Image 1 (cartoon, helix red, strand yellow):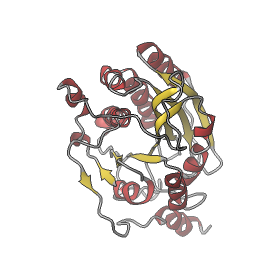
Image 2: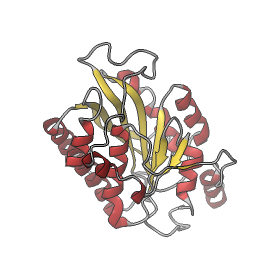
Image 3: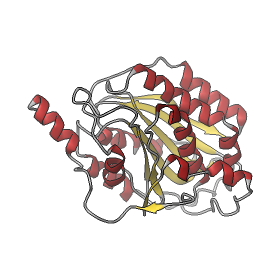
Image 4: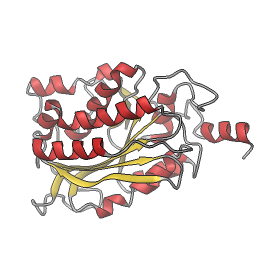
Length: 280
């Protein structure tokens, strides 16, 4: 089941404050079929990969706000409170930036977050790395790069999640649906943060309804969702909302199910735009 989540639809912090945390997560098999709580020293509630778009369609201000958004979300009191609701009270996180199909750079290797000190350390690592930009947009490349990273994680989670943020459709590398389906076959959940703060432009190869594209072509797995950013002022709030939901491991408070139908936006639209513009 996949879900579409608006910024106002997921008031996770309010639910935490109200004490609605009893059934947010429960022990179960991890993606590799083994119980994640066999070894308490390495058991975490979720293994979370943050895959962040740094393509040229993202301006420097957006890239800076995006970095700040992730760093601030990890140290927020809402995130740290949500962390406590899981059976293990900790998560493992890795953060990488991506652009073309052969361009991915790990900014933060796997790190354990189990409280304020470890959260501060990860946030500081994110912020101290110089911001970069690169050409092309390969969501499929990001997914293929992310999948084997789970095998390198020294921690073992009840859930494995790839969290993809980006401001445009796949236009490089393999088709995105093939990468998505391969990840889903491994028990990995993919969530999305489509960034829609600018009017679609021919020069940046943006598209209308990027949220539909992410919902129908990118995300998947039990409880998967998108949190679209349509207002620059809501950028950091959206990132925090998404991370809270991923750590809490519950479905949205007011979910709107995505109908099982043909994609509303062609899953090859990015490739078509690139072909029409550059002829290759």
